[in-house]
Image 1: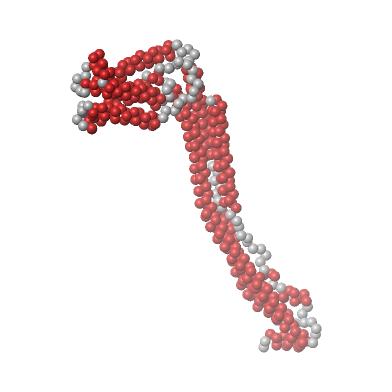
Image 2: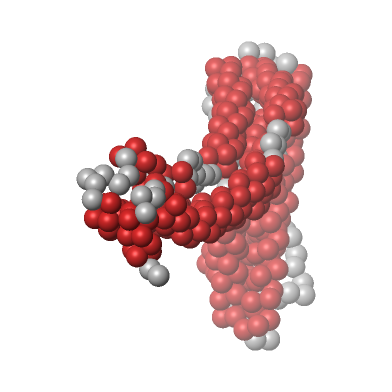
Amino acid sequence: MSKYDRAVAQGLGEQSLDAALYELRRGHEKALIRIKGQLKEACCKAEQLRSDIDEQGVPEIDISHEIEALLAQAESELNGKSKACERAAQILEAFRLRHGLTRIAAAPQVVISGMVLSLLGFIETAVNASFFANAHMVAGPFASLLTSGMISLTNISVSALGGFLIGRWMDYGRNAEDANDPEFLIPRMRARIALVIFVCILFLLHMTVGLVRATESFDVVNHGLSSYALVLTTPEALFLVMTGSCLSVLAYRKGKYAFDDPYPGYGSRYRALQTLRDEVVDSYEEFRERIEDRFEEVERDATKAAKSCSKALIRYNDAVESCHAVARKVEQAVNQAESIMRMQVAQLASHHRAARGRSSAVSHSELEQLLIFDGYLPESLPQPAQDKLTQAHQERFVTQKAGALERLSRHFQSLVNVDKEKV
């Protein structure tokens, strides 16, 4: 017997339709209970993953004390080197005032000066070689270049050395208020005496070269008035003497400026000050790199931990998405159950009313209770989460790093400004 036949029999027998209706509801409830169990399982899995995220989290890394220690060390070291710069600047200023110097120390251009001296040596070598070769005084071109090169090397190197060791002392203390003080006068007198001796030595050298060319012999060279007269009467010998003398003067002057400031002691003091200033800059750059390296190291550790949290967060959001998908299935099942239940109840009630001959088989309130399955709908669902903690950690590190570097830069800039004002 079908359920509709039972409804008719119950109507004829004056029996209630409640049992049949509740039997229909239990049939729908079995499927809803099964789907709701799946929803509960999915939500429990999501909540478990959520608890794992909360327990794991991004570790709090505090390096503020370490950064403060680095900043304190940097300030102490920069202050010490800045004071050393101040002392070197005071020493340099006292030297300038004592010696009457108003110009800035000149930086030597060693490479360019060396090239110029080499060019002078090459010119003298070429001139001497050509004259010796024309007089057939040497065995060949190579011997001519070797002999001329030795003469040129001696002339240029000795002249440049004389300019550096003697020429720089010729005007020592001349602009000082007490220029005739023995501290200045004695070095100038020594330089003048040395210059006379130096000129005599170079004169002897050039006259010897001229005598060699005049007599056309390397074996016998006689220094005397007659020999010197021979040099003056021999154009080639006179030309060699004049050329060597001019190149000696040029090498002497170049040697005076080539390797240091032309005033003795000025360049070394100026370079000492510049070296100390460079050390201040190097210390600033070193501490800046140390602070940046420490923050980068911490950021790498935090990023490694954040990746693990991000993976857990992705798993949690996937579980939440599965939970919401099952919840949508529950809603569909409830709507479908209510629709089918309404149709079935309407058919049963119609057969039951026809059998009893009455207008109403079941009250309206009873039907509302039987036809609604809202109790199977989920009350709340877990929501997706965003990785705000990792972003907050990154922003905090960026802020701390910027603040530490700004403090270091501000302190360094204050020292630089004070140094400029004193200079």
